[in-house]
Image (cartoon, rainbow over all chains, first blue to last red; front, side, top):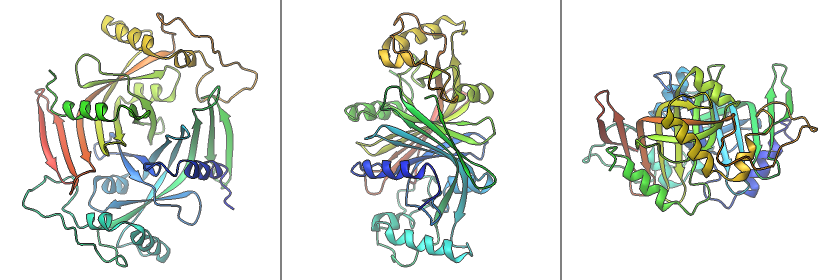
Length: 193
Length: 193
């Protein structure tokens, strides 16, 4: 059973919102290469063993990969529409790509790849994301091998250090802050919404 | 008719997603006081005259207000679940609070205040957001005067400089980038999703 004091609330939200098609959509904020904030939607792909690490995927050629290599600090906003609650996470992202040596990370990369749809796997063979669209260039649709991740398939492992959990239902609303301290223990405090 | 080449797409998305209770929920990313990214959900309250300025509200005592006073650069992510499309905006936020002199901004502040629900208006009389919750301190529920904004009611006027519009439906997906140049004109380019 995980030690994280916020984990039961997150599991509960995932369970209660599971029928909503977008309940795994999370907004990831980074520092852009120009030093300004950047934010986009990513899809939650599960926990990496240790329960405070969240897995997301990225194309290795995308802007967010370059941004996170430069500044690994990031933030997440996860709004659950059915239960009207929001989790905000602060933490650090570790990139796992084709060149990562550690076996447990490559294993996670293969596992997540296997769990993707054929359409999503095929998108990692598309032309470079964000580059000008050239009409003549094809977007391959042939499903890649489900057992062999394409080279541009990468994981973002988001390691959580702070949590802000807001429940909009309730009168008044309720809000908690959780902070991971250097000695590895979490503090919990209820704060004003 | 607005000049912004992306505005028709945004209006269309607002119209087509209007039955979804969260279609006005947008994620606002800022630079935290510690220099790390921060992101939270805010509610779109309309356009300010000029069509590239989006209005949001904030409590003047909130962290985002302090963050934006220090670094006005910000980013927005607006995901429309029904039509499966995402708008990402980069820009600068101007704060409008009780001390703002310009008449047109105070007028907007009063207009937005009038348009809020009684419950939302009452929340601006609550104890300081993010401060430790003290059980004995009351959360006032008496509706404030709808014609007289409370002192802690502030607007964030988000002035858009760059837009990234992604349509997930379609085979393949489609994506456009719009950039505002110094001479006041927008460039439009279709890019790879």
